[in-house]
Image (cartoon, rainbow, N blue to C red; front, side, top):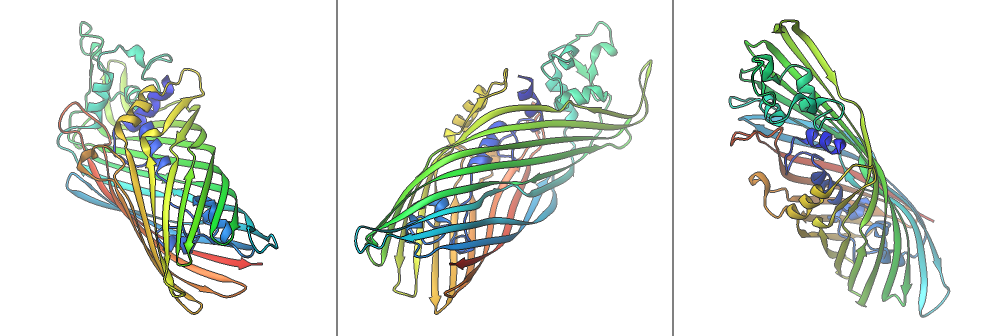
Length: 500
């Protein structure tokens, strides 16, 4: 049970926050995947369920693999430019991060059945796609006249004796424990031996200048192994298995600076790393009733992840040679938590997709998808003995709702050249908007392509925008601090295709 308390300390309990805070927030972060695939598909807003003929179908609708008429290899490098703009106590702070990554590559093997009717051919594909990118920096700062994180530590410790910080205590290895070891809080019995031993005090009473830097890294990826077949050029069927990997790393550095205090400053650093792998399955069909219309339907099962994580924290405080008690003078203090590790499983919800593509002769096409995801179906299960997720699963059920994600795209063809545009919308996943900030996401996409018999190249630019909020800590008053921030990212991606 102590591992749960450590991560709750990491969050300091806040919803609609920066990436991966509580277990409920982590479940949403890992469930809210973006459509992966080639630059062609990305420039179409990710719409791909009814399109086919692209390795991206291995991820979304394996029936699309049945539309291949030759084998091919693809490779896709990309640059991602992530920016945030945070507002805290009237101060705006901007931050950014740029990464080079490989969001996709594939190898597809096509075979003809040498038949004139019936099943005419099929394609086996192994494809790799990035489905979630965690690389982002968020920073904020401001002077807080109302409270300090020390007020949270006092409230968190209140009501229990100092034994709660011992090796078997409920708050061991939490930020509140680190605050206790750094003398930010202490039992009232130090001041008065007759005081209530379950109450605490602090010598720090000034107005703090607060700042925090939050860095998140790594990604979710999926290897898709699928097969699609073609029946009379009218019905395309497919199935596949997805082997997923998840790597997430977060580093938070929270600082408070005081003036005219016995304490100069305090710095709390927390590190969380989550790694794991999972599996899912998908099936799909595309029907072509007439040459200019294709209708696609696909379903992806829930993804079962086996995860392991590690958490650690360190707190430093700098004091002005402060006489804490008769035998203790404070200068530079430091305390480290243990490195806490545990194993557990997470099931993220499956998806149902419906898509339609309308071809405009040989000039291009219009395509659109609707995807249903029920975020409140995410669920944790314990592997480590003594670790319970009952309250976290209840939070997931009470907080989240099912949504319909929308994607659309348009392609116009001029000889060997292609011009593309797209739009995608991911609605608010919370049943009730948190902190009056909607966390819906929008994507504007565009790109160009050039195709020849023996190669093709596509360029996509994907701009994603949304808002979020974050509470660095909570206190039992209306003055709990709130950070609101906008997050924007621009992903520039190229796909090189080599048919063979």
